[in-house]
Length: 121
Image (cartoon, rainbow, N blue to C red):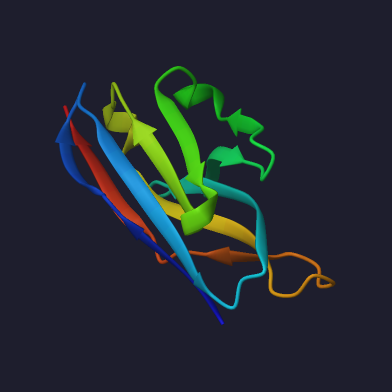
């Protein structure tokens, strides 16, 4: 089994910063892409940022220049540094990992349980 556990969410004032972490554990051979999604009340879940195993990144337009995704491959951990937070960033943030449990298996996407980020204006 594979588990992804997020941490670092909370309440912050507009203009402030937060850093989310997500550690993957369990039967992991390798992890391809790791990323972050978010879901605000009444809205669909959306991609925030993703990083491949090779280091390529992709960001939602709404967070470019404010959020930075990074990874520690040795720790199977992904981070999301969020700066200049806005009230519209309020959402539950979920991390994902595309995990291979054997060298010959196809990657399977696993999700964390989510962490709440609330930005007060």
